Image (cartoon, rainbow, N blue to C red; front, side, top):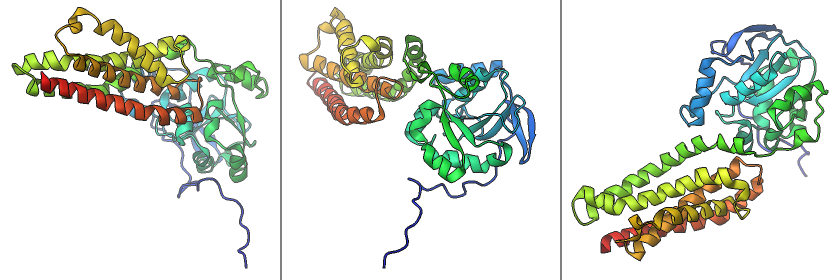
Length: 371
């Protein structure tokens, strides 16, 4: 006899220990005091950003301390919230948290912070840390149903890919309303009874938004590239003809510069020129930028003489592989593509990039040996 039908579970189970009562620490620089509620003292925050906050924002833009730039997850009260104040959901990446509280200004609200492991809302939604299970956990852990009289959550629209509204409703009793795309529209959205205009649902990717991504992309690219450059220089110094330093410069510097050219093309040229670079795929856009920069830098007399065609071909392949790889990295930061589009592009581009970097390194090693 068939077993009795059971209520359909969530797509993924709620983590063990979910719902255990816990509130954020009051011993944080952002906490100004507490808000007394039925569940106890909830940390109170304000909208003013101080020098330390702005300094932290600058540093994380350069990938310095980014992994630890967080606030405790849980429930916070902003201003003078009461039981019918709106509940806004965000990530525990402090830059996202700070921008939200600054945008809210003198408005009172509750802010429910999810543990996204220090990742912003958009990226965390794609990675699954800004997700359904985590949101349900935070609702129950904060005893939110005892703090507010309504059952409404305002979730960032860019976090919608990670949050299943019907499951939130089913397992917590709270309904989800997706806020505007841009944070600066949030106050107007709240004033308009949580109704978004058509413009509030459109996300563009203007130049200034692309510019702020460049520093962190450069730093992350250099972290990956510098060990390879060191490998080029050391191998050239030991294997190349002549004294170590002379061989390292003569044979190791060109492929190192080729790699740096690829990094510059992928992390600087691509975001700057994104709308005007031909092609839809970011890997192709990166490769094209790499090809142009390589032509500009490596056709000069400095690298146009005294090197074999084998060596020059290896430099080109290295540049194309690296520029395509780092150009493709912007698929996760752009509104130009979708999650499925990113997956398809990576499946197609990564084998080609791998072949190019392996072939380029192999040809360079062969030219070094023949030299």
